[in-house]
Image 1 (cartoon, rainbow, N blue to C red):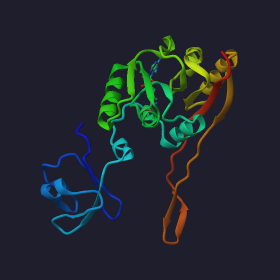
Image 2 (cartoon, protein in one colour):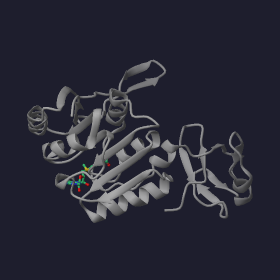
Image 3 (cartoon, protein in one colour):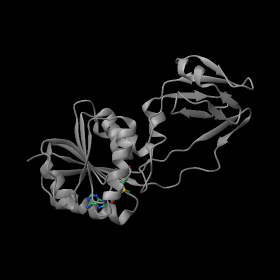
Image 4 (tube, protein in one colour):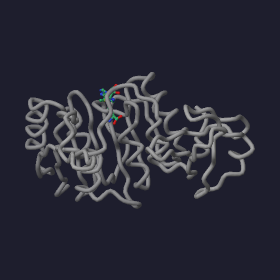
Length: 248
Ligand SMILES: C[S@@+](CC[C@H](N)C(=O)[O-])C[C@H]1O[C@@H](n2cnc3c(N)ncnc32)[C@H](O)[C@@H]1O
């Protein structure tokens, strides 16, 4: 995938992702000449050949993230936000993540953490995630082709995030990998998965179950006096369960 060089945005919010500065860029509003694209700086306003104005800015993490390849189901941003906020992952954090899938969660984590190692059992998904890592340009994220139910190699880890069909099978390994004070976060769509995960946490004397939550996001439309919740919303995504290692 070619990297995104610039973003153009129309007055209705429609965004255009510029991957080449050596070709004219065609839109439904006409085209922008390559010479203008090459010279454009953030804050400039370009005109298409039909006179439509397009504002220029540099691609942010979110702009590039919005164009990643998707293989299996990704974790929505509302849930990723809660994972980061509840565990305090920051620039000093070392995180182990599994399974990688398309890498959506792992990419967000590595955008704020020191280092992320993400375990993926399927080579095809690992390849998609590695392409996404390269596309977004993160250097602190490694995709490891390994079954996490077989063990975690890393030690002294701050947070382990699990988005797996059977997260309870990774609890013992996560407890060993974590530093005291570190967190395990498990993301599961169904309640039987949550129950089995919490039972496995309860069996490990070094861990405490903190809480299980579901994040509900309700977007509203604001269109003059039509002010109401959107009729189409994200439905259920998953439950987030947080546990903490409190002793060795
Ligand atoms: C729902 S996807 C993860 C999506 C990812 N969290 C994201 O945000 O893009 C679950 C992934 O776990 C992987 N997986 C399943 N069992 C695994 C295991 N034992 N070890 C490592 N990865 C595993 C699957 O191949 C799949 O890619």
